[in-house]
Amino acid sequence: MAQESCSCSCARNDLPWEGRGTDLPIAGCRFTLYPMTDRYIDIILGALEKTDTSYVWSETDALSTVYRGRLPYVADAVKALFINAYEPGVHMALEGQYSKGCPGDVSGDSMLDKTGDAPNVSSYEGKHFPVNCKLALYPMGTGNYVDDIAKVWYMAQDKGLNPTTIHYATRIGGDVQDVFDYLEEVCALMDASETVSHYILHYTINCNSPTKED
Image (cartoon, rainbow, N blue to C red; front, side, top):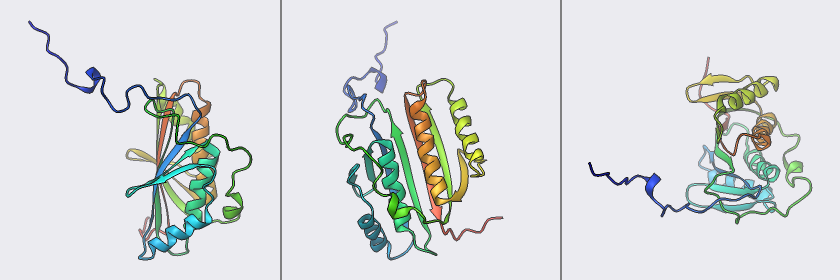
């Protein structure tokens, strides 16, 4: 019997990410901010004016914004943008995805020469309001991914973020400072892992939701 040729991606060598990859410590976050008000443009632009993005590489298109660089600076910029956009009573959500170690990544589009303290701390420290968050962690390159997911679950529990399992995700809630710090710490934990070569952390944070829950 003649052997049929495979037409799936495993047999191709012309994929757009073929030959890519980087050993540089580049973390990235792609996100979209959604203020649920007809003043959304003013809120987003106002938050951008208050947020220092000089420590990250950034790009915005019609769908989302991406920040790339060292993890502490990426996390600082994302956290600052959300907190700087906050207005009491305005329902707002941020959908984001952290990633590091993707074999399809590139060494460019980053600002790894930055050092020192994160630049936005003074713009958001001392600002507190409750948020809800759902997240899903995908540790890649390891057969024991459930163990890594369990670690971040218990880490949320230890921090008083009250993790609960929902379909396809974990839900947490608490003060905005604690939730954003936790997301950064999850990424840092994956960075420090000897078995995780690539991770994705997908999350949604919202505040002032009009949805009534029991």
